[in-house]
Length: 428
Image (cartoon, rainbow, N blue to C red; front, side, top):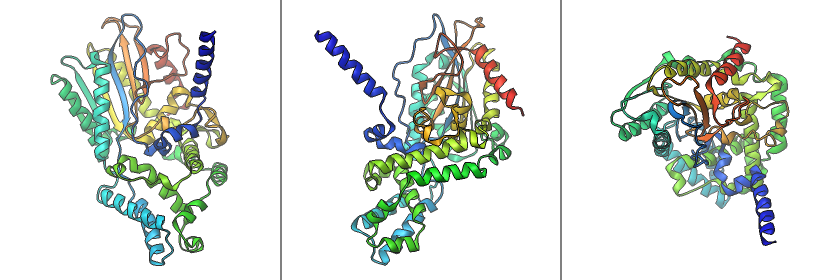
């Protein structure tokens, strides 16, 4: 009887854990609500699924985002500061308002002349990613083999690449490297598809998102927290922008050294944390996901990158010991590539922005700072033509929209065909 009671209790606990809502997850770790400003959390999956009998990893193809950085636009710091300074001069700041102003002054001082640059935490993240990749798949990197690395021309991406390669070199001094950051590779490393992007914000799509945002975000609480005279703030400031930038500053603080001594999350209630994430999640879906209102084709902005991954994999599979191909770029590639691949159901297509959480379309699980997609290839030996592949999203095993009895391992021939057919259907 006691065993039955324990089993039922455990089953109920398991159901509760699996059914945990996003809001509850944020209560456990509020940093996750930062979406693309979330510092890389590392893999939640500590033990990987054993490979099919006799198969070993022999090649990795990767695309990763740069690590933690400072905000790119100086105005993200200076606009809130100018509002708070003006209110302070008018003597309408609360004690909390003055304290927040001092905190943002410190954030600005740390970021000044480093806008958009890799932070010390960002460098550490890539050292740790490389360390885990080497330790998880030692056969790929053993002996005299090669790593080919490419970055976009942005310095934070170049430094992210350098931190990984330096770590690999320490692990195995026999490794050789090529690394590059050239405009020559930008057409697939950071494709700016202007024609496709024009489709994003048609009139209906804009109206749907604006209505969604206005249903979920109300900045009045922030005004009463910071200002003794909210009418002054409403008259002199764009309070909607102020609210959004205070949220953004609070989100990005975790990527800087300032995270060790302060926070801005104390300005927001649990409900505001959830709703700020909710509207940000919807924005990323509408602009990079399968939002049918604007055609549902935005993930195809990464068709060149996917085609390059497939072509280079074909070439490397033919080699006896191909090593790894590493690419370093941005979340605006990782996000649509994840959707294009359909990893973990992220190819979800809908016109209903309210449905995203229920369908597990959760952006913070896709593209934190340091986000990465790893294609890991397996075979029994060099003569083995039945190559298998598994895909890791942020170092966790992912599912593909392809039927198999061996998930997370998939026959490369079937994966290759599925995606080439998908790319051919879209065209150019």
